[in-house]
Image 1 (cartoon, helix red, strand yellow):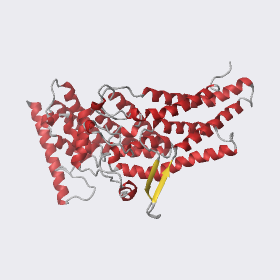
Image 2 (tube, rainbow, N blue to C red):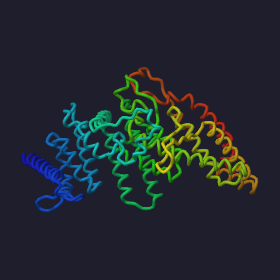
Image 3 (cartoon, helix red, strand yellow):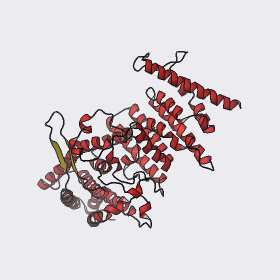
Image 4 (cartoon, one colour):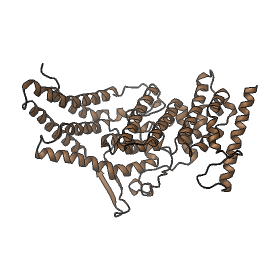
Length: 468
């Protein structure tokens, strides 16, 4: 009885703190950026952080005592002042709800089920991929190139309905997104060299994608594509930080295969309306699609094409003049684009020109014929380089040097092909009741690409073993 009384007292204190903060906001009695304070002169948000462990413990013991809206407001009060502390408190609350669900032999009431946390998750992952763009990029928002696409400008209710669908389908995955948010924000706040920060963000996203991929095995209610990290979180901030990190790393192929989900034009079937992400173009209907389309058209595609063009022009003049890593990098990027693109017409882009220029459209593309020709040219030049290496030193050392240069590309291409084969679509007896298998739609088109890479692998294999 005493413990329950303590719980009730904590709930009352939290409600009073939130009421004081709301009143201060409405009356404008505190200066901008200055936190609301209690009667002891201490910031209210710090008082809440001090009670974090106690609050999470109580929520786990008696979730019915703590309204989900109260918990959302509590976390929301902390976030502007200490982002990490707010995220960790929110995650603790989510885990408490999940523990209750897993421990209960019967379905929980709606008020204490994980789906009741849609508002809290919205605060923790705000802005989500469903929210209107908050970056102030009006040129992207009003892009006439996207005018033909039906873009939803969701209100708060619609955003939370989407989040609730995800929570209903697999709350563990949604809460894993909060863990990712904490890791990425800690990385950004820690700072350091730009290249190191970018690499850490990319690593975090890839590890997160593998984790949620394992969680979703056998779950037909959610289509998160673990091979494409940008589809594995609802946080628009995490998605944009990840994609922006790929640009200075010159990982243009990874950028393009990830952003294809925001460019897809396919529509959801009526019999798949209950499946989260069933229409693999679902992300394309939200505002973030406009921003990513513009960045792809004006920045990423031109840089990727320039990279391919420079390599091709160089080897046309002198096939053996580049470092081996440049041949390998170009060949692997082209192969990834050919095998990992899933959506219709994924390599044609258009966006309005920057305000400093005329108001026309910028149109860029990477024709499939260009990719095929580039793979043929660069692949042939790399084989010539390997052959040259076998002739410029002693017989034993020559093949060791050639194998050392050929092996990384060989292993990477073999892994890429094996992954594609591992994701070959299986026949389903009741496909109408399950999520549309996007691989089935495009797998036949990729067979020729796999055959082309296998043909090249056979040529490359002769250089990958050393002479004993």
